[in-house]
Length: 401
Image (tube, rainbow, N blue to C red; front, side, top):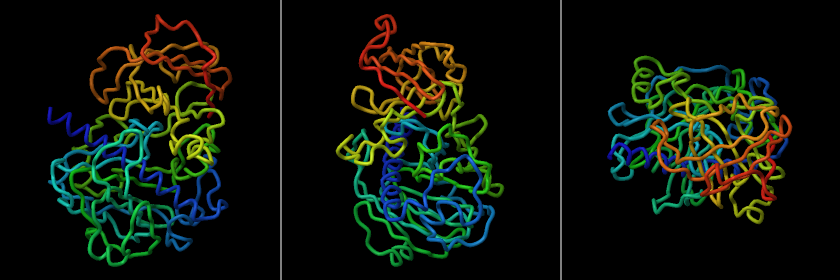
C-alpha cells in the first residue's frame, strides 16, 4: 500500500508541476515578440537559433554542444525513484516533456532535501508558482520555484517544484509571487546548492537543440512548444557511476529508458491530436472565455504507457467535462496499425494502471475513425460498454494533427 501511495503522490505532484510549467512558459512567451518563436518544422536548429536562447538566455548564450553532468540533482540516498518522460495523467493529456525525481520520503517536511546543479552553466530564468493548475485540485501548499540552466547555446536543463531557493539565489532573484518569473544570468557550478525540496518531486528535463528532432506530424500545432522535439535523454549525460545510480532508481526498465513523448505516424491513429479549431497545444487565444483556462480541453493522445510501452493509453482533455486517461480493454488493435482503410474503431476504456496489470470494470467506450490521413472523428460514451454503442451520433467531434 505504501508503494502505491507514493506513486499516487508522485503523479499528483507531477501534474501540478506540469501545469505550473505550462502557465509559466505561457507568461514567458507573452513577454517576447512572436517572431522569436516560430513553429519548429522537424528540422535541426543550431547555435543561437534555438527558442531557449531568445526565451531564457535573451540572446546571450555562450558556446555550443553538450556537457557532462558531474553531480546528481539530489544525494543518491535522498532519491526514492525516478519517473521518465511521457506520463499521461489528468490534464497531462499529451505525453509530458519532463521526468520526475522523487524523494525517499513523501511524508517529509518542506525543504527536507537539498537540490544541486548537475553541471556548470548559467541559471537564466527563475519562476514562482503560487497556485495549483489543472483538473485535479489538491489542498497541497503551492509555493514553488522553477529554474532553467543554460550549459551552452544548444544545451539546456531545468528543475521545477523546488520548495525554496538557496540563500545565494534568493538574494539574487528577490521576492517572487504568484505566477511570476525573473530573467537572470547567474553563473553556477556543478554541485552548487540551488534550492531544496520536500514531500514532492523535482521535475527534470534535458534539451539538446543540436540533435535530430523528434517527429510531429503537424509542427504548426505546437507553435509555442518549439522545444518539445529537442527533448534529450535524461540519463545519457551523467558520468558514471551517477548514470547507473539513477537508472537503478528508474521505474521504466525497457528502452528507451528515458521514455518517449513523440508517437505520431502520418496517416495512422497513433499519436497526438487536437480538436478542430481548438488552437493546437496552446489552446484558444481567448482561453479564459472559451474553455475556462483549460488549454488542454482540446487535446487527445492515443499513445503508449510511459512505464510499460506495450500498453495502449487513450488520453483526452474532455471526458464528461474533465481530462481523463484509460487503458484499452484487450489492449488491441494497436493504433500504429490503424489507417483510413480500417474504418471505425471501437475501444472499451478501463481505468489506467501505469506499469501494472490492467483490471477493473469498463468506464466507457470511444469510437474513432480516420476520415482523412490527418482528420479523426471521435466520440466518447462514458459509462457505456461497446455493446451499447452502435455508431456515431451528432455529438461526434473532428480532431486534427
